[in-house]
Image (cartoon, rainbow over all chains, first blue to last red; front, side):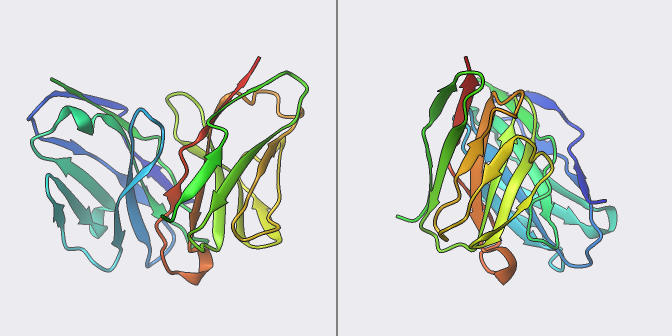
Length: 113
Length: 115
């Protein structure tokens, strides 16, 4: 079965620290998409990144970076120099062959000033 | 601007009543989805639709119904058969089986409370 494991239920760090959110997935598909979404306290889900399974290059976007390792089925997300506005729940997951997102339980990130 | 609009933002329901949550998108997306989120939990799929006039049950469809008469609209009815409807409901859309625009866009959500 396809599933996602976000082992860190909650992470709390002090502002300006770096923090990494782990994501391990299982999928039957040989090619697939992976996603990260952010859910701030307002509730709306914000798209962060989409990664194709055949592209294993790491990606950096400002303070955000993603490390995709197909061999270990992991797609980890790092925030550098965290800010209070980064406080949110973060979800990762693959898009299955029916083009539906498989959701993990999410990691709640708390950035303390 | 393109996007997804959910209404209302807050909804109160008396026990035994049916209520309908609205979801409209102007992104020309084929696929639309309804999710339920309980406090501290992830998202669970209620129903989805890949094309007009067709929809499929998700993981927790009991007590809910949907329709997809227009591409832009995918309303969700929470029926009296849903025993614990208090939750946050999110609607989403993406390109679906066309393969294009596979990232999903979400509405702002509807918070439903049974009183």
